[in-house]
Image 1: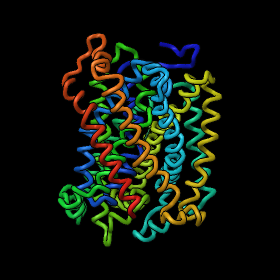
Image 2: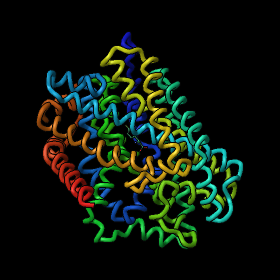
Image 3: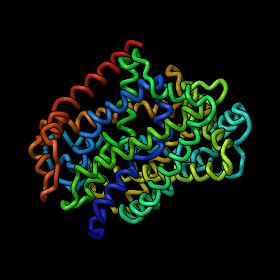
Image 4: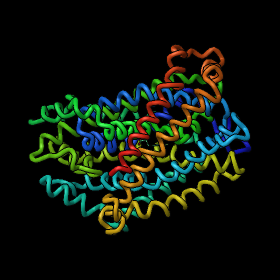
Length: 458
Ligand code: PFF
């Protein structure tokens, strides 16, 4: 289907959708975010809780979002309006549109760092002792103008690709990117686990501390991370699902997206922790946002031709980030097109400008400007604050609303009819219905309530 008069597009095939959705899911969240969260959340306990969240909560919601999108062929706000006109459900879509801008504003900052590290690793600028590499990263991110400039490069590149429409680009890039990225990650993991001292890292990553399994703050972080990693709770998958035609089945596509996304995250952990623990005095919890930028360069140093591996790694990571920023921008853009009749070009220009303005405090919050680096009263940087607000609150709330909507308002039998349209196979419909009706809403609600109470109490 060609781009129509309304500037809507469609995937060339179901494979095209799987690639684009996996491209959205696989990104900084997997390779930068997941290990960072594992480090903060105390290791293997986080991994266990994360996998539970993915299987029991996020996978069913992924299917629900794609079904809403394909059924309505609309942006998230309009989709809810179409399914339940004259109700307030469209606000769920609006929350997603806002989350798209909010997440993109800090995501593009980190994507800018990975871009710079292509250059730094290729030219051998980041080598030497762990302290030297750490100091290099600290100096680099505290350079405000540089961080801002890199953020702009990411945003403008994303905008230019999106102006071209959904199909051109994304499918093609991801088709090459995914196998290359997986191949390189496997290679790096194989190297990392054979380093001296790697066993301690493997134990940290794979042997859960049972007491932390019942820690609500770890569970909340795991849930937020799972939503973020699968691009859920903000309508990205509704939007991508809306470019599916009815002949393109949903169940199998969703399984592929979950498997790819989860394997990339798990692989990233198999690289970072063994490599990290092979270094003297490594503390996984203190790495913060710099974990991959400080541990990986040391790993590259241990490889013959390490600079090349390093540069290749950061090129692939930048491209993975780009296929995610594309989906983040596509949500608000599709809303202006479908909901307000804008042209694609104007929608992209407006949203990109807004996001760039909102990105300024995040780009300056890593040492460049004291106020943003250590927000008064919160004790964290503006970038960390944004990540927590959107990932741990907005996305789970968005997911909760999607689950309630599909399970109780639109209703499971209607959704199943969409999932099984044109004779598509969707086994275990009863199980999916039970998860979406009861398990997802109750679990998310409990986690959000506990987190709010804890935040208020502290
Ligand atoms: N899933 C992406 C990642 O893991 O890097 C981030 C993301 C993209 C979140 C798109 C949300 C979204 F809509």
